[in-house]
Image (cartoon, rainbow, N blue to C red; front, side, top):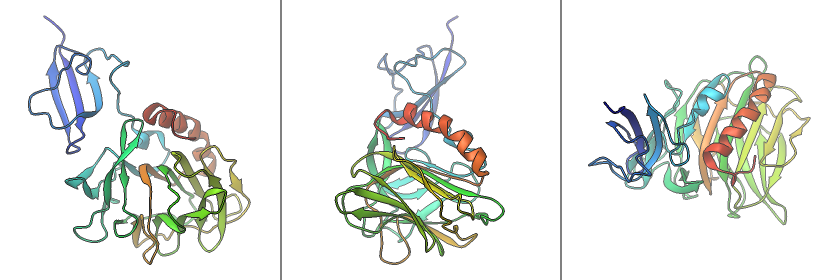
Length: 284
């Protein structure tokens, strides 16, 4: 009797995970898509048999790679959409932190073109944003880290990735030098990267001058205490709660409250996973 393979594929049409049994371990190469499967497959995993890694891609759980992960959002997971508009984006850690649209009917963002064949969220830069609640630690006792994979066009200053009542992570348009990734709580650390470049940005808030910020292949910048996010209250994605919005696309967002040393020790593994999942087109 031939081996049966448990197949799983996430639909690009509705974000749902479909499972089925097949005698063919590589349904992509075989042209195998079950009847009624909507859209094209984004994630394919196989259990109970072999896997041809040359033509299928196992999903990477970035939340498991990030130590003390309290927030995990990826552009192909947990999306609730109306057409191409994303209305809700679920936190893959579970519990709190599901992101809902800031303005009803407008959406958090549109489904973006993404990078390396992996989708993203692309806000329109004027009205689309998300709100969520998530308890965060005070940096004096537990650090807070943000890790994201995204791209920024040259579309004006004061673009906001995430914000709350005391923190903005801003991307400023900087004449002749590309975009500046800045972590701020009234005090800034800045790191430069080129426009229209997919890159990994990370910011660590430690409640001390060990705060550090890095975007893409740029040298990490440290030596200034930036403060930290608010411990509670409504938080925003792609909006600062006032007049600044986000352009560009976001494919991955991770929050961690690990110690700085633990977070830094995990980065090589996470960065390598980013390259595996999104391809070499992302600057790390």
